[in-house]
Image 1 (cartoon, rainbow, N blue to C red):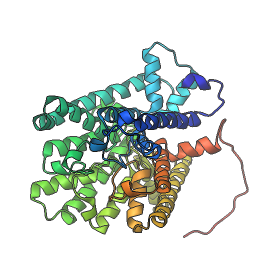
Image 2 (image 1 turned 180 degrees about the vertical axis):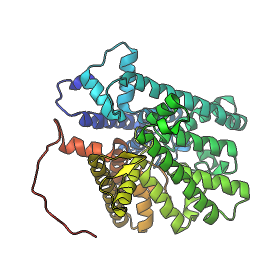
Image 3 (image 1 turned 135 degrees about the horizontal axis):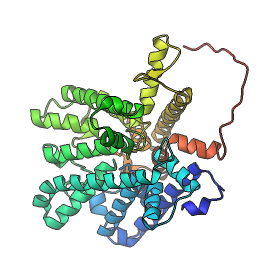
Image 4 (image 1 turned 30 degrees about the horizontal axis):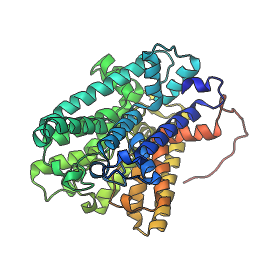
Length: 445
């Protein structure tokens, strides 16, 4: 993939988008084949493409129950697509080239830097290897914990396969599950009271969603918070707040009919999974309007940059909140953790939030018009897609072709990133244009 573009015919951001698109297309073709379905029948390309997009973009929205519709081959393809999407197509390609002895030139290193969101070009190959090692290690440990539950339930072979599948799906924040035998689209509702499954899946989601650079800071500096990079501090503080506050609300307001232990597990799990995994242990349609609104907000925010999670990212929200604090505090400079925040970062955060909110609202309204469904359900669906979450209020399998295409586009944009798409379209090559204009004044507020 890298060496096809050494002459810079297209930009780095366009290569990233093309790489994801090619993997999605290949996955769609494979899933369309009769060997991929349990019934041995051809799957319509639109449905296969939707599933492939959902897997590569680690979303979890499905038009067919994963366990009952797809064959072992089809499930294996989905698992590989999830792992590829979670790792990143460019990251995986770089690892393969490195292992096979190919030296990466400046063009390839620049592409990797853009793909993983690294601040520096030095040490990129080591970082790629670190990402792969962390993913495989954590997924392996997670599978071992899940195996203590799944192997006694399903037997050695099937239990081990279930453990690996769900561990990979959780760490990659994908939300695909194999629990259809207990009821199609049931997700993990059958394990709502099982602390091993719920807490293991929750921890895998969090570890995958905080980002590999956060992991690197933790390994390099241990628990010395002061020595972490500003980005890591922002990620950890925002993640803690976005887990704790929703969990308290859900525990107090949503699950009062459950026993205390199950109520606590449900509150923790449903606070974790919207960012951005897509599993659920309770019936989301039974949540109050406020609970569903909280879930939508969490889905739109997502996880950390350079992670397996999607959404606007917690750092984007941190920058916006810091900007608001500086404005309300009468400060000329925006800052956080004793460091100033560059105006370029502030502008990018505002632009990203505008892109996400506009697409979320417009897409939800269009789907509402096409499907004649309540607006809040359609907005929930569009938030789940653009946040690459996978939670649904039950309408995904019933959507028409145009609505599916809209969700495919939202999932693709959510995984590749709104700014990546914008830069690919409008900033093909070269540095940013630096124009100077006379200052004007606009009244706001």
